[in-house]
Image (cartoon, rainbow, N blue to C red; front, side, top):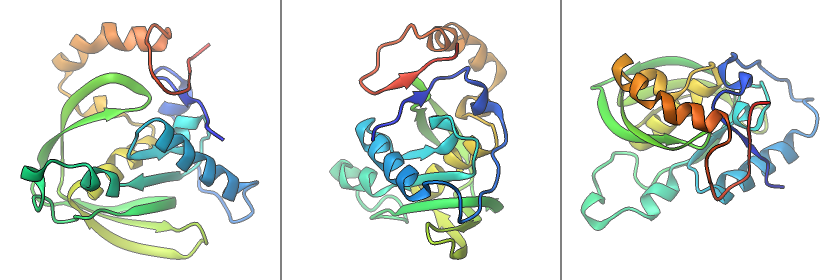
Length: 192
C-alpha cells in the first residue's frame, strides 16, 4: 500500500525516533509499504518519520541511481552498483573522509534541491529486517543516502545543513509546502 509522505512542518519530522523490538506490530507489512511508497514517489531513500512513524527505521536503494546514471558518471563513485538495504535501530558510529557536495532533495520537502556537504564514508550500527545485528562502513552515494535518511530518524532535515542565509531564502517555498500549496505526483499529507 502506498502511504502518504508527510510534508515539511509536520512535527514527527523534528523528533528523535525510538528503537523498536522484533515484535513491533506488522513490521513486515510496514517495510513492504515503505518500499512501495519509495518507488511510487521516485525516491532513493525513505525514513519512517516521513510516513508519520516515530521509529528508527529507514530504507535505502542506491542501485537506482547507478542504473539510471549518465555514461560520463559511470565509474565515478566507489559504491557502484549500489545497495538496497533496510536499517532498523540504526546508530551512527562514525562519519569521516573528505567532505563533498552533492545536490540533495527530499520527498518531504518537494521541489527544493540544494548542494549539501557530507563526509564520504559512514560507519553505522543497525539491525536488518530479521533483527540480525550489523556494523558496516559505507561510502560514496550509498553513504550519502544513509546519512540523509539517518538525519530523519534524528529529527534533522537536509536543509539544516545549509548556511543560514540560504535557508532564509527558502523560507517562502518552505511555508508553501507546509500549507499544502504545492503540486506533486505522489501521495502527501500536510500539517493540520
